[in-house]
Image (cartoon, rainbow, N blue to C red; front, side, top):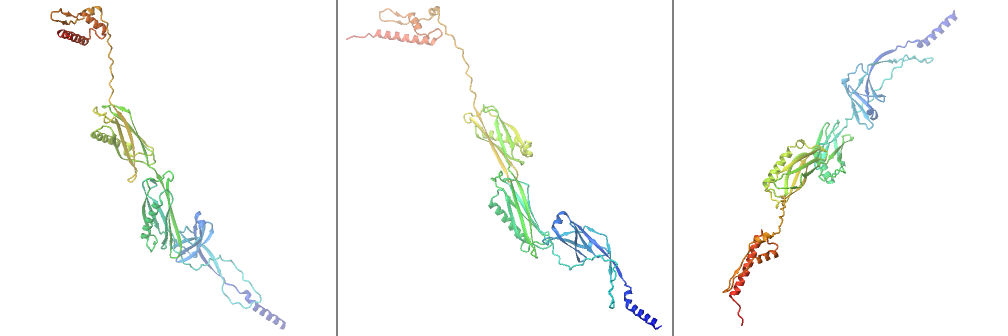
Length: 495
């Protein structure tokens, strides 16, 4: 009996020491719900963005990069109102923020978290490891919120007023600077550099000085506030002697550098290239005939061709006459008719397009009273002026000479008359010139037709038809007889 009592006491004491091993562990299990904000990146953003943060209900969450193009933000909330997400920001390698709008909010992911109660255990006889039913999903610890830096961004623009400028004309440039970030900026550097073209350094220097001076006055010492923009417009003149063949374009780069209150530096630039055009045209003129007569019209033919790649518009046309005998009234009337005719040509009214050609004629009548001696050479001087705009005008001229002379009269040939030898009958029928010389008491001396026969035989020009010659011969014979008569009346006396 005593032995049984001792065995019972020993078992009871053993049970008392082993009782902590049979204590039931009470486990409290809570269910917590998480939401993921998922952001998909583009190919360009994959290469440049490295860190991410999200602000939701004034709490900053830092994202986890699930893959190359996916970032996730885990928020421990039963539901997430995307309208309360203030900003999702990713940062590049230099810490410059880049703002997004969240793409996707995933469904709720419930996770069971097991919490073990704190109990005071007596010193065990041997260690017993309590069983763990399930390991809870790791919960991302919320780091301390860091201050968000304001967005830093600036934009610069260099805009030319035309895509194609004309040699001898102007290029209007508009420069713009805009603070597109959230932080005020001070502009620390402005530059405009020409990288191509043949504009003189003096012109470039003066142009850039005007641009920078206007920007300096507009921006001031306070810099640019967030969203503020300033613009400056200046005109660059292209000289007439610009070397178009060697430099067919003008290129420039506009660069702006700014800094914010956190000493962050940002730079923006804009490049502009303007192609050039050389306006030009040719004028050719000819006359239908190189020699004309008074009273005959002069026909002129003109050809005008646009040899450039830009449309030309008629400004003026005029005729002058450097040489000739046209009166002022005739010159004025001819010029007025020429101007009206040219201005009515459709190609000139609508603009002469690139490589377009126009051919037309003009008639100038010459009056029969035209003074050939004063204007044997008539020169017409035609001047054509075309323009591209108000500042670009091109003039080309052409001269057309014409010889004016009177017609030479044609000399008519008169048929020669045949000379017939006088016949014997004609000789006998010739009149006989008789000269009678009478002296005192002497017998009259008669000169018969022997003298006439002698004269006809010796003088071949005598003939029946030559009355003048006969009269001359008769006069000579009459004079000879008169001399003989005088000598007879006054005989010479010898000593």
